[in-house]
Structures are given as structure tokens and as C-alpha cells.
Length: 517
Image (cartoon, rainbow, N blue to C red; front, side):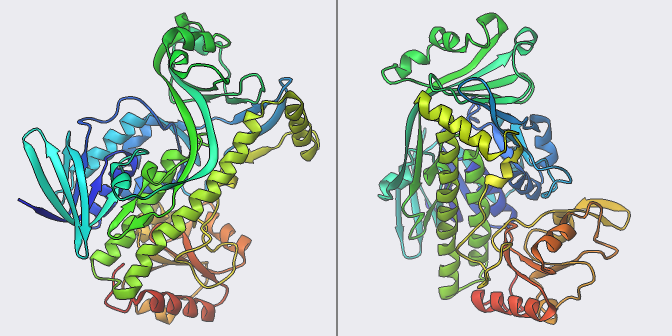
């Protein structure tokens, strides 16, 4: 018997579970299938940022994941002769998104929290230990053939999202090729649970060893979890390198087997890949099915969550009939347009970081070190990791040229009467029109029930740290129109400009008084 859903999700890793949670929270009927029966026990991702924590906040799990997260330590880069050449840190408080900007986390535990949240949603059906064998689609929906221990059944949905990893069955069956962004290197990734004796031997910050002989990375994870990413030399056997004996030899610079327990050691080829098309008909790609990038800034899982956050509100708007016709088609197309451009730009920046780390020629490496030190006048300054992240440059954005357009809008802490809350807890997560102190609500906005206006400086929204007020001053504007995924659609410097901005959005999406995006 065929079952019919609004959205079917293939794959229940980080991107899949976040998409299921956001779509389920939006009231949609969602189906999820996953080949594994449990959360994958080995940590693959290790880093999160404040944008992702804000999504977790939207899902209502930010307090539940907190025990499994810790602030990311600074990352110090050392050159050929052991000298410090770069130091990457976090932006200073007050934190712009209302959360610690860079964090390390224990992936299996965080995924369990997310799954527990989805399990609370009666409108989301999750099938574990099943295999999606065939995907087909027509003008009205997508059909998935699902095989389990008892046989095979078909699931039907209006739309489908492939979150089934780098070797995506869905992407392969639909012949959606990946573009090679020219990065392909063999590395060994090692996770160790280090004991007290071992911890005393290790650095107290994360380290990038930019050494031509063997570039490698040491990341300080939560509690006693430490990760090494060690480049393999030409001719070295990746399988041999991943044996316990060979792994301990490679770790001997830092630890001995008496200093900890191997949690995982696996050889990988680090790639830079992005799907040519992120949508075919009624099927979308997300997460590793859509892109893979080198791990040098810890952005792999973050990218997948960004995909889910971007796509989920757009699908919800279309499925609830709030955006229709050609405008709905344009809205859904904007997902791939925005995310592909963002992934390509961030991957380019990650590759640049990788090029600094991975220079194998000693002469060129010394030239690199000298240039980096010369550029900072011989004094290494802190570089916030967040400075590396690009803004959106294309897609569903206002027809204006402004530095704030396409950036993440901050989430200040606000006093709502005597209660101190983050902005999203007061304003919600739909479309928001945020006004600097002293600005009046535009008449066009007041007539739209789907657009929440938040006037800073009022009794229900008094800033405690001046984060948003400083943002408005820095960008020389007084109004920001913020999308459901927290990116800035556009800004205005006057009341008339704010009216025009809201009118432009309504015309673009056909969102009148009855809409509720």
C-alpha cells in the first residue's frame, strides 16, 4: 500500500534529521528512511558554529545539546621552523548570534538529541534499518521503493530530499553529477580518548602543523577527545596507515599507547566537490549528497545544516500554499542557487587555508611563512574564524547593493519586561522586520500578519549588550528585513525605503494579507 507524505527524506544523518525537525515543526507530514538502525557511533564532524546553534535553538534542543559541546580553542599555525604564523580565534563577546561562535561537539550524542526531538513530532514518520532502492517522480510527486526485512513497500511524497551522503543513491539514480573543485589528497583521521597522563603532554590549543614533511592538524575536542588529521605521503598505503600499529607510530610525536585509547582511525581522500544541480524536478540534494569539502575549518556538517535550514522554510511556504505558481517555482529554485554559490565560495576559502597548511616544498613553505609574518608586521594577530564565512550573494535577496544584504542578522539578548531572552524567542523564526531604536513600524508591514515587526528599544525588546544596535550603526541602516533562515533579505535607511522594501518582497513572492510564511 502506498503512503503519501508532504516531504520524504532519504538519510537520517545531521542534514536529514534537521530537515525532518524543521519541516515537522512547520506542521508538514514527513517521512524519513535510513539504512542504519542506530546513530553512527563514530564522530565524523567535530565542529559547529553559532549559526548552527541558532538552528538548534529553533528546534528547541539548544539546552539539551549543551552538555556535549565546548568552546573551540584557538587554532595556532606553526611554520617550517616551528614559528607561529597565524592564529585563528572566535569573535569577541558579546557574541553576535547569541551563542558561542565556534564549538566542538560529540556528534553521536548531539544526533541522538536531535532524533529525540523529531520523535516527539507525531507528523514525522521515521523508518530505520530500511533501504531506499528506487526513486521515481512525475509531475505530482516522488515515489520511493523501500525495502525492509518483511519485503518492499512504496512511499509517495510531494517532494523529496536526498540526505544520503557522499555516495548518494538518489543522486546516482537521478544522474546528478558532481563538479570537481580540484582538491584530492589522502589523509589519516585519528580520534583518541586521552587519559590524564596523555593530556599533560599535549598543547592546550588546537594546532596546525604547516610542515612540508607531513602537514597535520590537532583539534581539541570535548572533554578528553583529541583528533589528529595527518597527511599521507605519496606511496604510503592508506590501509596500512589506518592499522593501530601504524597509527600509533604516526602519533608518537605526541603520545604513546599508554596515553589513551584509539576511538577511530580511518584513511580518507579529502575532496572538494559540489553538485552541478541541486534539484531535479521534485527532488533536492542536501548535505554530503550535494557537496564535500576539505575539513580545515570544520564546516562539513555546518554546510549540511545550512542546506536544511535554507530549504525547509521554502518547501513549507510552497506546501502550505503561501507562495504559488511561478513565484513558488522561483522560490524553490533559489535554494540551489543560493547554496551552491555559498558552498563554492566557502570551499574556495577552505582550499586557501588548506594550501597554507599543505605546502610540501620547503622553499615555498619558508616563503609562505615569511610573507604571512610580513603581512602582519611580524606580530601575529587573532583572525576570527567567522571572518572566513561568506554571505549570500545571489537568490532571494533584495534588489539593492548593500554590505548587509545576504549576511546573517545578529540575535541579540533582549529584555522582555524583566525576562532576558534571545531575539528569536521573542520574534519567532518567520519573516521579521527589525527596527533600530526609535523607528516606527512601516504601514505596509503592519498590515501583514505573516511579518513580525520587532522594534528594538521598546519595553518588550530592550537590548542588554548593544549587538543589534551596533550592527545597524556599522551598516548605516535603521531597518532589516530578515528571512526565516536568519539571513538579511535587505535593509533600509529611512521609513520610505522600508516601505518600498516590504512592498518589493510582497510583489516578489505574491504574499498578501492572507499569507503566513
